[in-house]
Length: 330
View 1 (cartoon, rainbow, N blue to C red):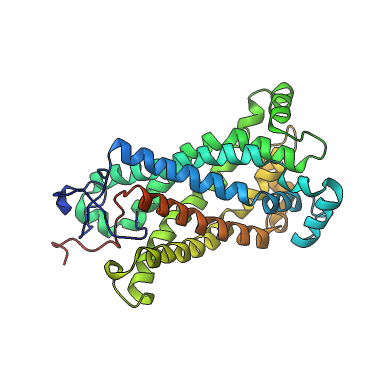
View 2: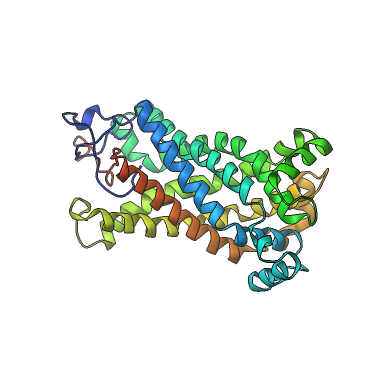
């Protein structure tokens, strides 16, 4: 992954021996071998922390956004939505759904970031050194899409519970009450009926999140940062990570918002299908709450990349520099 910092690779390992990032040019000492089981598990841990903590932190904004999508006549804007929520549910109402949010997005982060590293390594091995560099944007897109496919299956049950708690007034106040009630009403289908809309929302979102981030970091070091990446401090490199993450997050919010609107309405209602909801909302309806989502996802994505990269720094994991053309290509 083209995040902050140079590769902190194993001692004595040459560039040609490093799996998954054959175009990297410089390496430093690291605690774990790139592509090893421990390395991938720690990447998954970083994903759990980055997604679980950040999504839980913005539960109040997410709650208002979901209610704007399913009941726009009552929740007309961000500020008014907060006011209505405080009036109806009190201050504690803004935290409704935090438990399924934390559990669901922690599991999603484990698969999203962990499997992204796995698929990136495998696809790079299939392409070879030269093509991996030339087609690196396609490689990022394919690896992230593959990872998100499995991540959404892990997320779907808790996402369904979260949305039901947040958008259906009086349904349930806790995860312990909501999950058994949903199972009693609709069986397992209640937890997985939103998987397809989640794929529609999250796969384009994640493809944009990873590919845009990778290429934005590359562009920032090439055109904006006044000195080479190798000469930047860790703090400066983490700052680049945060800026690139925010830019990627804005694009992520736009491409995934229509599907997000469908998921919110679908998980609130019983017996509806994604196509029925989409037809009822129409073109204008699927864009309700976009501004709130841009603020939420931009900040969220920036913080996720920052936390994920910080975990790599803490555990001294190999962290690749900006990709460079292989010597043969030069």
